[in-house]
Image (cartoon, rainbow, N blue to C red; front, side, top):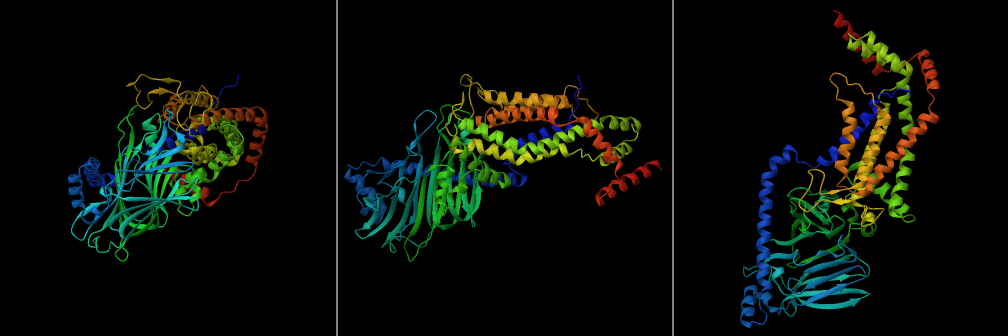
Length: 616
């Protein structure tokens, strides 16, 4: 049986992919500059936390107001000054269409419940983005009689109407019959986007222009997935600012930024988003995100605490601000409908060329395939087509490996001949490669080309809404990890998790056999070089740990991809590549005069000069 040879190109390819994984895991780690500023930013975050707690305490006190106690009501109305004109009422108004249900309270005029009507969580509970006081919205402002108020503490008078099939809710906090602050909600049929307008009438002598008016929106992300750590990894504050520049706060630690010209803010909760968008950008804003997840938990209910403070300017002494609320799925098919607001950019496609491939190639490609096939089968079909598209590059890689194999005896001979002169050995080896028309680095090309594809898929599977809660074989959800065994509560293996996933095991086994076939059993260890046989065993093991907590769709793709690659490799080696023909071609290439380019000539001259210097 022919002895299998060491293939350094395959090892380099896997090392490159492994490096990509390490880069993806650590790309958001703080730089030294960020660490230097961390202390100041942490102080800002703590201040935001303290302000939030103060607001929550005040709101709780207001909610506990006994509306049947006329004395208490009169005392409270006296604290509000002119805004005590509106009669207190704790009634709730419901806006509802085919996809979304909103409950809006008279107190504060704010949304106190937002429910997705067509989606459920991992344990079959309806998906709520706002519920049980996890969110607050209000305007901080001062009055001309030196009162500091927040609309969260005001009572509004509701009026519900319909126009052109749309539901319109007007809530007014009055200072007189014809003087008021109004929140106006307009819900359209089958829409997740709700138009929202803030305006005042006749309050130019009530609201002070000496102090800024500030919109204050805070929300704690409600858990929707079986793994809170996994969900929290893709839960992030994203915002559009400075002429459609998209930025994000940290997803793994507390973070805060002050920005200008903010067009929209997205409080993303993995597959669902709460977004506030403005027709005219806010001139500035203070944004904060506080990570609430310290470790994996089966009971903890919140992921991150978001808050935003956005100034609103008076126009002629009055407020007039046109906004939009979006409570719905982080789904490209839905968000692309609101192209004028650019909400589609809030989806985490990835950055640079990786995001471009994900957004414009894999997302529409998979959507097309999944319209005709089940979601798991669609992944298999997409994998096959991707691998077939890559097969010409794979062929060139294996052709290069075959040429290197043919040249192996001559390279060994040069090694023996110049064993005491490493530079001369390198010079003669490169000269041999040049005469034979062989590039020792060509085997790395497939790994390099696959980098953007691999990273795009790394973001596609966990964030594609089309895969959410779609099952395949034993996997309940292709956008999350599959589980064939759950460890007892409280037990977890560091870096591995509290469960065993089967698809990553299959993918790791496929990687192992692929490396066995390409690198073989006899892998010599050279002085100063890592033990390649150890790397061969380590790589599948590391992939097993990495993939155990990632989307099962990604593990399925990688398993099928490696199996197809093994098949293509066997076909190429056994039916396409002819070693005798390759050897004959190399011998013909050696006879042909080889022209040097400027770089090759310069390198040859430098090596010759170094050799001459060594002899002296």
